[in-house]
Image (cartoon, rainbow, N blue to C red):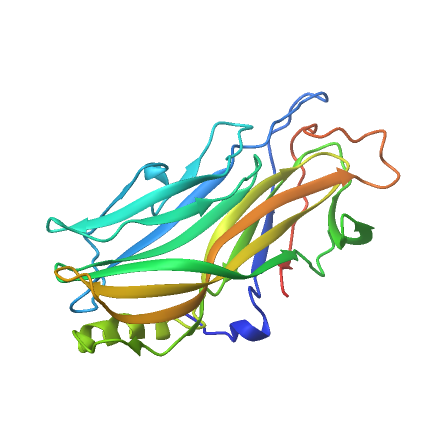
Length: 294
């Protein structure tokens, strides 16, 4: 993976936009947005060796079918804010459970949550998140579909000036880990294992990950998408299972979750033609690159 300086461009999110055509429908064709999508990116590590456990089982009290895959809700349905408790299990040894705060998400939106769980029969790893920043970024482009009109706090919009709805795909790329603190030792027990665990995150600083966001713009619309990044300080506390004494803490600065939401409104001069969710197929516009950069 290419490493980037996250502090110079937090979520220098690059969105590659690809426009596709659809089959022709009648002039009064309508569509409703797909259901909201959610993915929980979960990893598990061995707390004594520091190695990633590929065979770990993840158990959640909600959205079990969103763990390391994308769950799409029923068409037109959003996600209401809730909490998800998740743990990892391997060889009958469980990690400490953690709680994810799931945010409200409208139909058509997509969210990803990042969680790492540590499994050990001697140590307990728990964490708490403290939000340090919330970043919102719109897509921009030099593509022929882009226009410049101020609306909803944004001056860059893509245009669909036709009777056809427009499908589009954005590749959302960001850097999950931005910094890792030194270990604060209370008692230097199992030092080598804890240092390996901490160094796993150090090696991820600046690495990028990506996911696809798909949307559909109504006929005669200006459209775009906005990404919101929840940046946290995730502080891990390591304690012994026998005595429950704290032996070490360390903190990771990271993107805990990303939400992408589509927006659209009537194209200027074509307000009479625009109706949300209306359009028929076969818009053959070809798109170029779209980028979201802070």
